[in-house]
Length: 89
Image 1 (cartoon, rainbow, N blue to C red):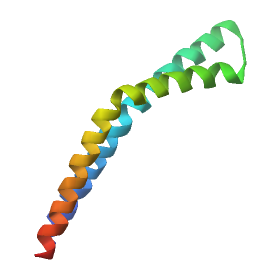
Image 2: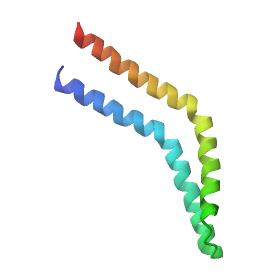
Image 3: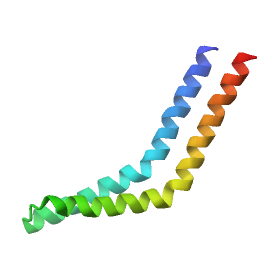
């Protein structure tokens, strides 16, 4: 296997991971920011106030983006396995 193939697979791996976790991470960061601003404005320091909304939002985002995540990861693994099969020939 050439070094260029390793670099290509590594780049595809990083992009697949970013595309897969991106929607969940962005939603979690935004809801955390909104709740943080709300807590700072109202001086409410309740731990469950941050946990429950994040749990609900992340569950919803995962449910909505699951098909996209599965197609991204399956495309990556098909690429990796086809490269492995090509090398073994």
